Image (cartoon, rainbow, N blue to C red):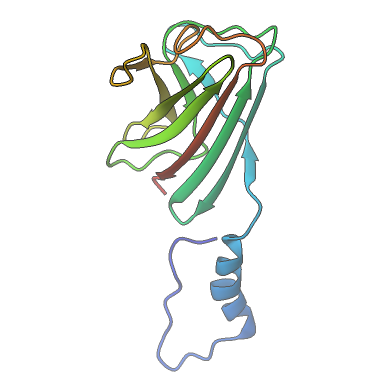
Length: 164
């Protein structure tokens, strides 16, 4: 799919192939299957390691709008690193404006948080409340918002503007 429409010229006779490429194929791209990708999982000090965890990412890009889903199920051999966590994006973000997505934990409790994407970034940083007072957020870490363990899940839904 292209992000720049074709320029038509006065007197030009469009062909079936031109219409297919410029109209049908562009429209069909909106209904394509989502594309899988493997997001990076990093931390400020020491990166986590997946071990036997399952990390699945997928996206749908239409023009410069990218819809993303990431699901991370922790394993018994997962290590959680140290420092605040970040997840890799399929495309670099727009160089203007901060963007946010929604994340959840699913373990003994559900905790809602958000992913923060800085202008031009290729990763989004994860934030959760650190107390029952949800107005204060902190980086997601090995112990925030929960002490992570096998079978705990982190789920992300995000729509953001890409750089290109």
